[in-house]
Picture 1 (cartoon, rainbow, N blue to C red):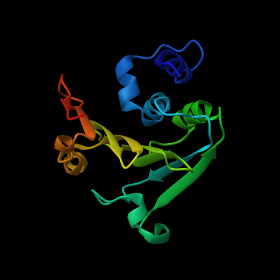
Picture 2: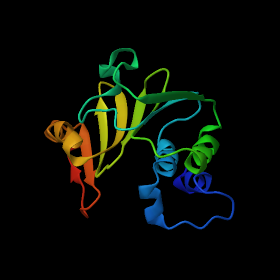
Picture 3: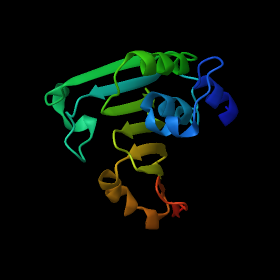
Picture 4: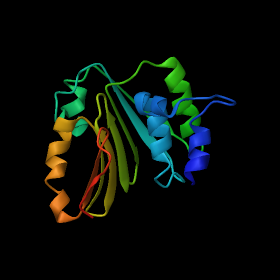
Length: 163
């Protein structure tokens, strides 16, 4: 899907939005970024509210949501993701963490509050697009030399490329 179509889907009808607003609003940013992946199959959206995630920990590291305050998972049928994310942006508070992935696990899109770095990675046939705070990006940065990871810092003009 082209970015033009994805951008239109991330906007309300006749809405005018400054470009920087997409970077500040997680639901719109994920809506736009998700369209870099094939969306012909249902995807699972995981939202974590509150600061239940210790820095550097991944959702799968906690058994049965033991240390998580409020985790919600939604199955987004084909064609419904953009509409749901726009609704969520209007009606839900901003989460601490969002993860979007199909059940088959071919790709993952993650967003964490306070993100400063965009990471695009290919690891064992799976594609990752991650919006992380600088400190959470450091382990990925070590992989740049391996040719699997690209990083783009929000406050720098040129990306660090290792592909």
